[in-house]
Image 1 (cartoon, one colour):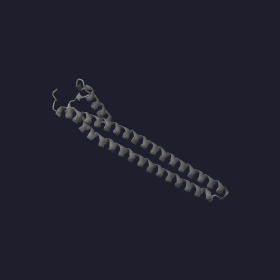
Image 2 (cartoon, helix red, strand yellow):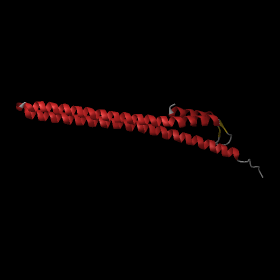
Image 3 (cartoon, helix red, strand yellow):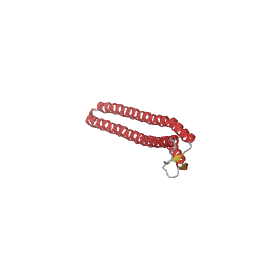
Image 4 (tube, helix red, strand yellow):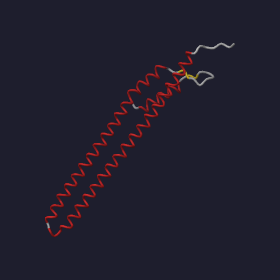
Amino acid sequence: MDIQHLVDRLEEVLNASTHVPLSAYLLVNEDRIYSIIDQMRVAIPEEVKRANRVEAEKDRLLAQAQEEAERIRELAKQEAAELVKRDAIMMTAQQRAENILERSRRDADVLRSDADVYVIEVLTKLEEDLLRSLAVVRNGMRKVQVEQEAAERPLSSSD
């Protein structure tokens, strides 16, 4: 289940809770709160797995870009070798091969850069979601603890 959905559900439970008159306390359904927290404990590792999959995809894209760059380099070398055999156009062949190599390096650099940007964006979003979820969980737990402490305090009589 999506962590953001669970955070929304936790917020709904808190919003639907009854306010204790003349206080900042809420009466919450403890079972529902703990159920959502348990689901969050399951969902957060899934979010981490998703981040790992994104990173693996980045690695795959980088490897693919490097393979493509190597293939282009090999093609450039082969083409350059064929052109060099023709003595009349030897200088042209060298220049063309250098241009192809430079273009392949630039293309590989662009692919690497794009993959890094994509991974950073996805991981940043994941980090924001996880931090937001953690804050909601902590706030929920804090409210439940405060309510428990309030419930456990003996009522003081007026002297």
